Length: 273
Image (cartoon, rainbow, N blue to C red; front, side, top):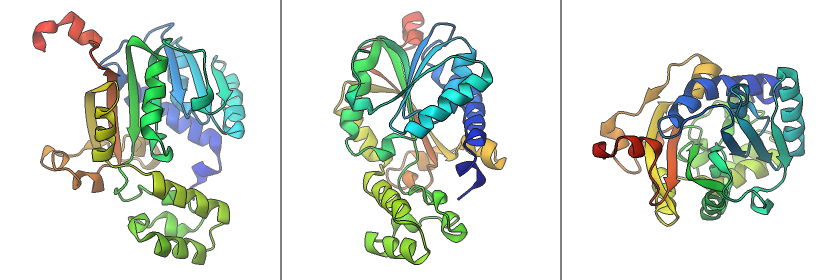
């Protein structure tokens, strides 16, 4: 387990830096971001992703099921002297926000959700007609797709691909290494809910969403802040090969738009499409 997993303020600041440098420009390919833009983040954690949007004057709402994370988000935003609304709740239980948000962010969340179709449908119900959903996740087969980096064992936290072992073997290794029952249950849960690129795009095809953009990263943009590594896209020769690309995709960025709706650039320059 890395220091950032203990020091949540450090993690908050790192996420904010990545969000400002990479998430915002990516989203702006399909949607303007300005003062009073209304933004929802599903699974906001400590709120780091939302900080640069709030500093810009956007109206931000973060939802997370962890009471501790929501309390930290409120505390960290207060320390930054910026305003944001944070709610501790299950996203599937929230009502009253239909057709309200310009942008929805779902970063490193969907791989923890069992019913991914229901999550996408719920997000759709929250979005304005011309809104956009930014969703990102690590492909399951990538070296740390099982999130084993959160292990307390230094060896396991740095062991790539061990999550791809048969379930019984993986659980035995976690137990033998002295991981807590809570940690083992969390990692085994992630093993059951992890998602591939192919599975995600198949689910999207069954919803009311269209894929406006997809970018697959060999080196996750967040690794720049965490490890000093320069982000790199997966070469086309690999990104276009189903299943093989999953082993290399440390982060998969998607912009989804409601089916049949034009993104702003299409409205301005229709002849390009």
